[in-house]
Length: 298
Image 1 (tube, rainbow, N blue to C red):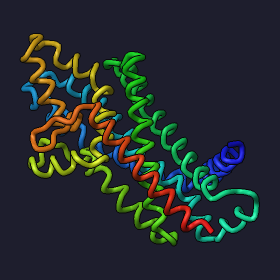
Image 2 (image 1 turned 180 degrees about the vertical axis):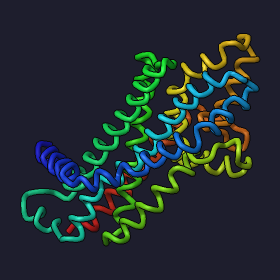
Image 3 (image 1 turned 90 degrees about the vertical axis):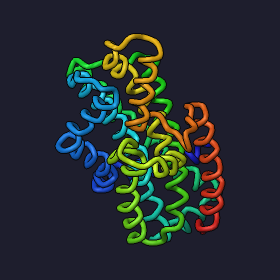
């Protein structure tokens, strides 16, 4: 295990020393944040207000900001895990694997060193982005999460980082050059915003497209992060509604409209169901990625 930790430390140092790699791994969440603040914030606040027929725009903006930071954290779990894999691609292109294998290192230890480093970077940066959002909420005098809700969001971010670390590790094993890796990064970095209901909301799409996207891990990871992250702001936004079925229906419609509650063919995906799906997907992806890495590390 000490050898694996040494490899993890080496990969982390290689990542942080390359400032351009760190920058480009953060491009997707930064672009999303800028687009949201400059172009989409007002539109999103209106979508939230229209979903429940509210005219309280201050609370609508507060809920909108909670949704935004949860969405940016989701995108970060994907983009940062992909950026961290630059070290793997460089080692493969330069033939550095052969140098490692001269030492008493097994292939599975070398592979695990990359995967754990990817997971660490993805989780730490995405969690930091989420707490920046909490700082923003406190500064704007908006609803702030409790310790329990913070723990739920951090746990959801960890699951998201786990899924995308396995997913990107597998996909990168099919890129044998820097050019193919760069192409994959550009395509998936852009697509992630659409696949996770960040650039478009379910309320603006057809039921068929919503069902397809909701069945994929991209939207599912976003949903389990958004739901607890938005709970206090949603409660404040809907405080004027009477308790009971009226408020429950309003919350259901609101969360469905903004991608925090997913449905597939009118069947609601509960948080427990999504977690079970994501963990199963992670296991499958990890097994296939391990097999692929074992084949290409030589």
